[in-house]
Image 1 (cartoon, rainbow, N blue to C red):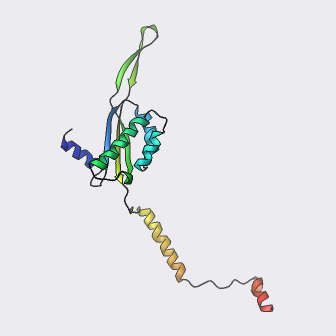
Image 2: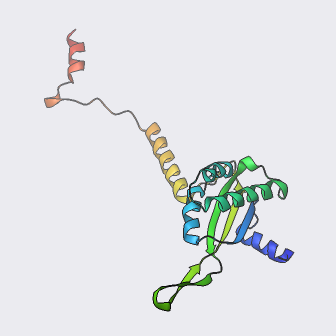
Length: 177
């Protein structure tokens, strides 16, 4: 792979953001089986993802574990990032090359067997100290703040009167004593 391809791939995955990535190509496991595993770790901190993958019973957990560990090492050694600050921002699987085989069946026939492969990509980014709020959440926060401000400026409600203009029972007992 040339340096220009590597730069364009980094630009596609990360843009100008800091982070690291790792790609495993032609892993001989079906993409459907790998997707079950990567859904477990998507969005987790990288060190926690390693712990989850270490104890996952699926066979696809081992290559995904190695790939996440490789992405952490890339971030620490090549990009000067701290491994404890990284989280999995993107992880996805693409279909690789299919190997077609023939399996013998009854009466001299043969059935086609497809042996699938996967391309797995992991992108790690450092956690930002202050996350920008989404527009909907920022608007809801602004509305809540404006409601709090209006409550503070409103005068206190007047005492509630009972039937036919009488004072509530607690007030009545104070006047009688």
